[in-house]
Length: 296
Length: 193
Ligand code: SF4
Ligand code: SF4
Image (tube, rainbow over all chains, first blue to last red; front, top):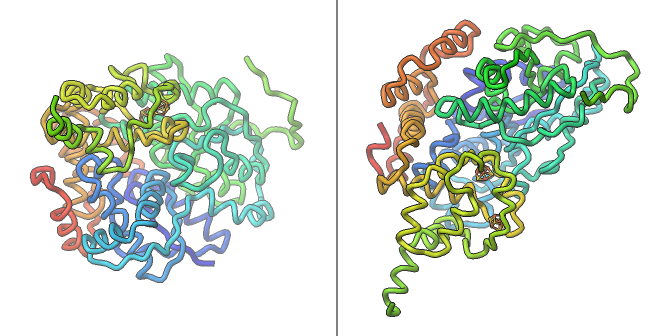
C-alpha cells in the first residue's frame, strides 16, 4: 500500500522522533509513505491571525501538490497540521468560487479530491496486522491522551468521538496495553503557548500529568508533536508548578506500537525525549478489568 | 437614531464583519454559558468567551472596543471545546482569531499580548522566507522582538544535544509561489518581515 505523507515542520526538527517512529512503524506494516513534493508549512496558529486567505492558501497548496502527485489520501501525523489541512478541505468543498480564488493565489489547480487522515485513522486500518506482529506485548497501563485537534471540531475532523474517543485505546489494547479510564483524554495541553505563555502550558499540562500519575499510568501516549513537547519538554515547568518530580514518560503512539512490534528503540527515537523513557516492570500477563484500578 | 445611521452601525460593527468574513451569526448565541463552562482558560480571562459574544451582540462601538482591548481574545487556545459543545454551533475560536487580527490592525491589542504578537510575526516571517518553519531563526526573531534574550536558553541547548534542532533552514523549492501568496493575501506589509 502507498499513501501520501505530509510531515509538517515539527516532524523535521523538534519532533524528529515522531517522524522516525512513523516511518519505522509504517515500514514494518508495509505501508509506503509518499512525501508531498515541495510541501510548505501549514501556517500553524499564526497565519490565520494575520489573514484568513493566507492561512487557506498555505494549507491548500499542500493539498494541491498532493493532487498533482496523483495521491488520494494524505497521512498527516501532526494533529495541528491535520486539523488545518482538513479544515481547508472542508471550507473549499462546497465553495467553488473560493476554490478558484485560492487556486489563483497558489498558482495551482485544486479539485478537493485528496482526503486528509490523522495517524490514528490510518493505523486503525492496520490494527489486525499490528496485533499479529506483536513481539514484545506492551503490558503497561497507559493514559491515552488525544488532546484537542484530533477529535475537535467533529465536522472538520470527521473522526472518532469528541468527548470520549476510543481509537488510540483500541490500538494500544491490540498490543497488550491496558488503557486507564481518566479525566484528561481530550483536555487542552496549552497548545501553541509553549514559548509565549509557558505559565499557561505548565498549568494545563500539569493537570494532565498529575491525573495520569494519580491513576498509575506507566506512560502517557500522544499523537501530536505539540502535546508531546508540552508534556515532555516543559516537564521542568510542570513539575515546578505541581511541586513534585513526575518522571512519567510521554510516548508517541507510533513509538509505543513500534516497541511492541520489536522495533529498535533508537530507530523509534526514544533517546530524543527529555523525560527519559523508563518503563516499570510489565503488568502480569492476564490483567482483568477490575483488578487494580486503585483510586488513591 | 435615524435609519441610515442604524444601517451604518450594522455594517461596521464587529458582529457584521465577523458574519461577512466567517459566516458565523453571533445573534444565534443564546448565552447558555456552556462554552465558558468547559473553557480551559476561562478562569484567567478578563472576559469569558460567552461574554465576548454577548458584548459583540450589542453592535455598539463602545463594547466592540472593549472586546478588542480585552486580554481574553489572546488567551484563547483554539482548543475547540466551546465550539464542539455549543448547542448553537458557534465557532468561537474563529471569532477569537478574527478579533485578534482586528485588534492588531487597529492597534488596540492588550499590552500583555505583545509577546504573542511578536511570536506570530516571527513565525510568519520565517515561513515567508523559507516556506517552512526554521525554528532557530524564528526563536531568534522572537527574542529580538521581545527582549526575552535568555529565556529557554538551557532548553535550546538540550534540544540541540538531542538532535532536535536544525542549524540551517530547509527551504522549499518554489519560494516564488510562496512570496506571491504572501503578497496577495497580506494587506499589512510589515507583518512580512
Ligand atoms: S455555548 Fe454557544 S450558545 Fe451557549 S453561550 Fe456559548 S456560544 Fe452562546
Ligand atoms: S477555543 Fe478558546 S474560548 Fe473556546 S474553550 Fe478553547 S480556549 Fe476557551
